[in-house]
View 1 (tube, rainbow, N blue to C red):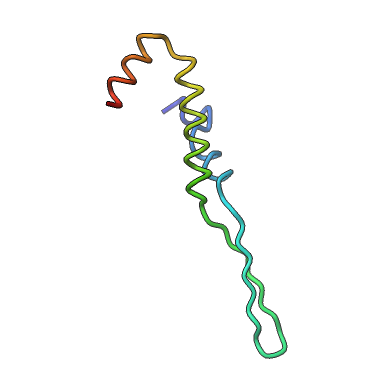
View 2: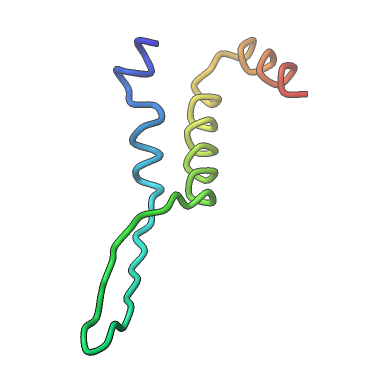
Length: 72
């Protein structure tokens, strides 16, 4: 838990993966414009893969074998 909070393991990754959406609607002679944000899951997966790969490269050989055994 400490590492999660101290190193911002997920929050920054999620916010960095947001994309801006602009929408506009014609209403009589006016134009309504809205900005919103959506989570780009492809960006999330790419960032998670980079983070996991970096952590995996820094792990000891026994930790790497354990991680691989756990994943299979």
